Image (cartoon, rainbow, N blue to C red):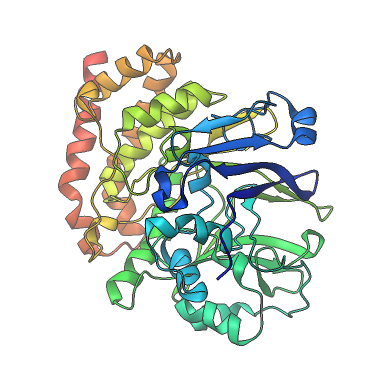
Length: 433
């Protein structure tokens, strides 16, 4: 086995190409896992061109472009956004035969060649770069759907480069695929931008049980319902047989054949948390969002309403990587809603990872407003307007769920929480007169 490098090169997609943005170097043994002290240095040429940028030109909102090295007590938080997780991690572990243990995390990151969502990636050191336009003809939509969760193995058997397809995290099998002009699908990173018609996140059920497929199908309905009640979503999810196609919001395909790669940073990273699976309070994430968003009032309000919606529909999978900020030129905004499904009914028992703390009285709208005011977030009137609109829109949520053909068990099983959350909002609005 080759020795693991003490440093890793990070690339950023800028000016229509991948280029070096900087280097992460371990200052302690990789055996310490995520707790090993580290240092990040921007490439000097890159820093000269983008000095002090904190938008998509930076590796993180917390790490503006600079000539000075940045030392961290553990791994840089943004690096965990580039680490394979869930089904993607399982593929890397099995394919490269690296045990999934903290002392091997650095080796896993150095070995796996992934194209994660966003505009950053780690340069793998153990095997050559996959070239775009690999020559593979791609797969038809029917082949993608029919192979289901076995699609990755199918791609390997057919000789297609698959590393780019494994970049999406989460327990459910997910693939980042590109659709060419002929309607055929390729692993992300293996098709030229000019030949790309659309970029997709394709999801399959978490397991083989019927409930897994029912939950995934409900995600398509919930995303549409979220838009109906005024929340920010992107595109129209497409459910086909056992498969969910979601238009990627971190890629913007232009008419000229050029693709804009937007930056994407999880709330774990935004809050400076270099940990896996840890539980935090909404107040922590709202504090970070208020500090870095280009429109704190709008984004903080949206974040709060999303939590209310999650409670109403039974989406308990609300950890810090299921919320992100999207980054462009001179702006940072809350990313569109994603991964919203009735996970409270998942057989594995998914509990709410992020909860309200004592500061907000466990999610009391009045105390949330006071908390936001304390953060310096202006827009109290706008918050109340959005809250009234959301309250009115969700007053018929039961009927909307029925119309969307959500299974009765999901509707009935969340009725109490839905009524309680709606009543809490209504009580607050009544106090305003």
